[in-house]
Length: 402
Ligand code: EPS
Image (cartoon, rainbow, N blue to C red; front, side):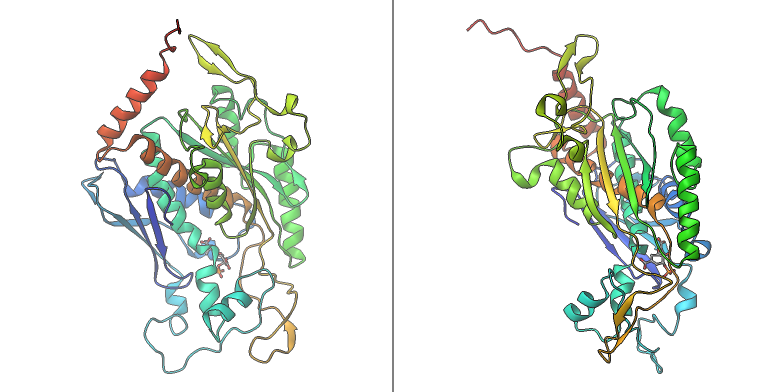
């Protein structure tokens, strides 16, 4: 992924030996410990509705380049996550030719990359598609996003996520959660981190758990919606000046690139579409001791493609994942005869994990926007530039006598 300035490349197959992650253009001097990234990798692995694979994996990164004695040096950072499932796939996923290749996967799964993937790349074996299309790759994004979060934390920026919907079940969220980082919300976020659905709403947690249980029994899967809220952002990230530098567009692209995510909402986008303008926008106020005040945050923290100082609110809608234990009608790619889709071990609902991946993608976009705005080859230089800009915000413009 190439954003404006940060570069992130991920490599690796779901059942290959390892995932490899490159992140380029973070400043030198950033304090980075593998254990800080591992916290997020563990959060991504939790959640009710995952399949058997998560019992096998215990994701942790090894940082192999770009960091010395716990600080970045300014060069590309390279990280590796070993696949613990790899030994079970030897003979089937070897890099070298094998004397007896395994039978190919040929029964196409509707909704997966299987059909367009084999046609596009000229493969005979759907496994050559599904190994890379797999959402296993999201572990790499969480590792890259973990670095971005460490960078953002230096500026007091904090990113949270929770699940708003699983199938037909919907969460109720507390008043004020999207208005500012408030101590009153701490209890909510603690409950989210402890919840197997990643919600603070106990009734929703129970309803979602029942729905996932029923879907598993039926051999079915469930989608839903998660929300990522970023607190502590300065005014001024992104720009209206060029279409492809608007932050809304970059966030939407990053979110839509997550496997299974088919819709993105910023702030109250869909509710605003049904409101008159007088009820859709956030009025502006100012107090010398508080700065700019927005009593509502329907815009979700962005105006004109630029952060406006309010929390950034981004939602992702996930389709139900496409590997069904009770498979849909399909066609065998080798024979072109009607068949049912290929079945392999998979998850029933990935919403809790998807929110953690969403945090990572938002973190990467925001870290990129911070790098573009404040620059700096070292963290100290970036912080000094940031503080200078924030200081200029504290000064009311001189009254005009013209
Ligand atoms: C996935 C299928 C399952 C998931 C996997 C994504 O893997 P497996 O085929 O090994 O059971 O568990 O996600 C992960 C391994 C992960 O770490 O998130 C798929 O087809 O997308």
